[in-house]
Image 1 (tube, one colour):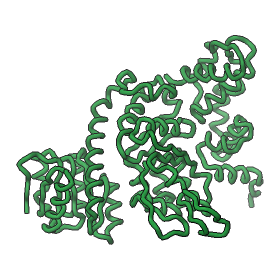
Image 2 (image 1 turned 90 degrees about the horizontal axis):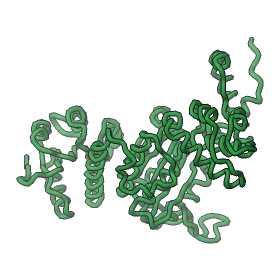
Image 3 (image 1 turned 180 degrees about the vertical axis):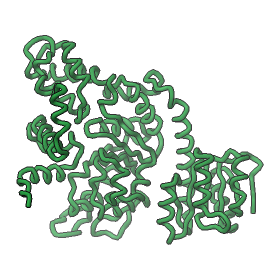
Image 4 (image 1 turned 180 degrees about the horizontal axis):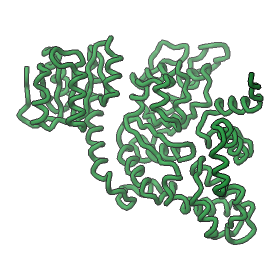
Length: 464
């Protein structure tokens, strides 16, 4: 079977089951979607898509002649902008996840739920338009072309690299996509998430920020799913979990990779099915939330190590925004320094109006392992130490390391273990022994920091 509508269509479905093709076409048309092109012979697909402007392909995974996986790879090689959805049997879910690694947008499992089909197709088309819209300004990064600049008034940025981030936020915000934020600790991921929420259609709903590193395995289900009265000893009243508390709004999951691997399947089910069961209840509850996740780790490496589920990542990463570290956006350093000077000067009732040029030079050449958060700490402490009207090097010299070449050479000859220990202890001292803050600056979980500090207390084994 081969059916190409006379009116231009952005959708094509490829499946050797003619009955399924006709059923899916009926579902799409009745829901208001464009009539799709239907192709039952997978050998014809590449020739057809070269002469039609399709935005979305739905591909059955198992077909004679040319499989859906082969077609996906050919399409992504030749026409990478086309979004693809894989259609799979229940026992082929692993293959579908593999297909998503090759560039598929999502997958649908047979028998196909009509409502889920329509939602997935709409979101895939939305993603196509969103990606192409981003490509239009990718080389023209400018703060002047933001549509709602007032939404960014509390996020100080002048560097061109942040103009792209702001545009991505502005474009992603009105969609229903789950957004995945990456960036080192202290780059402002929660602030980015809040602005996306403010610009979204969910701005009247709640914004809930949750740090995943702070939840133990035993508390996760109760805190996220909630419970009914009498669910367990001590459950005197019913309780809403975070998912329900954020209903109609946005749930921000910071440090998402800290979620115990054994609990990620439970998270996946809620994200995928948009429903949950409170502890002690057999009644399902529908969830209408948008999830923004964030991590300061290398997510690809985390997945490779088996510490984070690929299928959960695919569901959370419908749109990705990377926030560059402060050392890569030099244009932001001095504006941020003056911004923090004004804030902490006022807090401490000090009339410090400017920053000395030597200190400016020192600030510009520092690497900021703790990013914006560390810069604020440096300025805040320097304000306390400064007695004059200008913030000087003398008030910040101990806070901003100014190593000479010999010091760098000496440090470069240290073992990796000793270098790590020195850096961790340096950050811990800068954070006044606050382990939670130090862990954030270092970009590691609190439990990881505590383990390393315990290792530092244990003397190394003597050689045999």
